[in-house]
Length: 271
Length: 271
DNA sequence: TCTCTTCATCTAGTATGAGAAATAAAAATG
DNA sequence: CATTTTTATTTCTCATACTAGATGAAGAGA
Image (tube, rainbow over all chains, first blue to last red; front, side):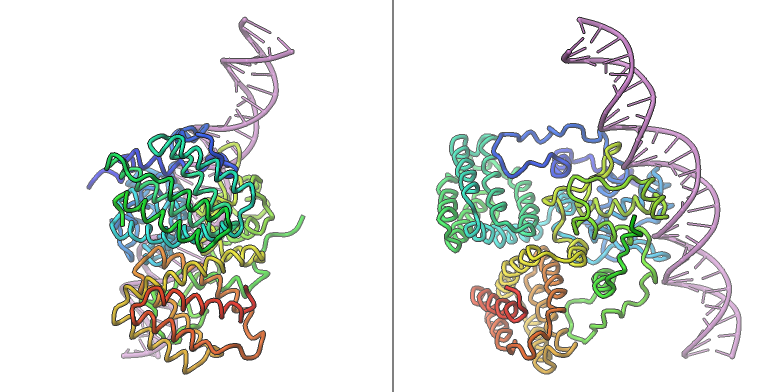
């Protein structure tokens, strides 16, 4: 047999996942260049065992090494083979079950659920998909979702933003203009701008959804960056969105954001 | 002190939650009147202990009895007070953690996460919100999301549906027309129609999202039903959506679906 | 007095064994 | 052949012991 699932073969991406959980609260989109992804005060130096197991199994499942209908190894067996306790394994299975990936019954064992039951928008599931090697369909699905969600968010933001939202967005765009997307500060400002739009929608479920979607987009574009030397100047698109939101023009904000995403996606090679 | 969280005070709604997990696969939206919500073959007669604990704590959290930043009772203490084992309690906490509701650290205890980290689109979280007594903002958020998602789904469906999709949708509409929304068969046909549209989008993340949204909508309208004796005839709206999808007119399908939802929502008293 | 270090303490995490409950499959019964 | 009973297997639950790491307070040093 082979040795182990070993999630440590992809350290770069693996680390990204951790950034999203357990950071400090981040208030609401200030633009300080706090972008050290590793600046967490004191994460448990080595991940908990049950967490590592869930990670390994999660990748194996979304990566297709287990198919829907397959049954996971029994508790005794897995614990013995992997040298962990049944407790840790069971807790890992509970996590997977909570995300809809598997379903446990006595006597039958725990089976992989049908993909329709998977919680595709869960941040961990998305991260696992990404680590397992995202399929073209997966990426297409997410980018389509982005095209659905972000323009709608801009529309709601245009109708509900207050003065503070406007001023913060303006500040983010200023910084973005000043530093450019080649610098970390510039990219942080870009992220802030989009986060501020989300915040201005006053819709928590929309925020949750968009957070997942933009995470995948960020992971994707992080590697697609710098393919062409100089891509299109992003500022006019952003200014147009900001202008529409500021003036409270919902439909216009939606269309401008749609244009922004279309341009950004084609520049990144997607779409 | 009070006795226990006791999720059994709301039997009707509590049972709804169970229907979504662990049913048979359901292939893809056939119209047979299989709508007995209680027809599951052999669910564990009484729910697992860790599941009940997760349920109780989940409701307590989303219902605001614990605020973000609060810490849950320690393992020893909770186990002693509630008469369960530490194991069961820990597994429940793992579930909540997997859904983003809490975050555990040694010595600090497990704290309630900021709402931004909650997995608002998780079916269980949504169900708990609903059981805890959905706030007006929560319902507004979900209905807004529905208005964003379902028209977009119709648009994609119009571009990607195949002959089988069309024929199934047509059949569903026939049954819906035949039985009407006053009967269980008619409502099942209605659900099938919407599910078939989702299926035709060929986008799994969209399907996952819409599944959550429509679940909440269904729970809501289940109680708002029959307020007015005879509401508007739903068939013309449905026929219009179907027609646009059949002809492959994406933008038209989007607009017709938007109209359908608007009408249904106003009839149900929402919006 | 202040700062840094050390250390006791508290809590979640891991491990193990033993048994209960559920259920799929086999066997017995009509 | 249908139905019921038994059997075997697997998850589920509990109890207990121990580990590890974060926290805060006591103590040492400036």
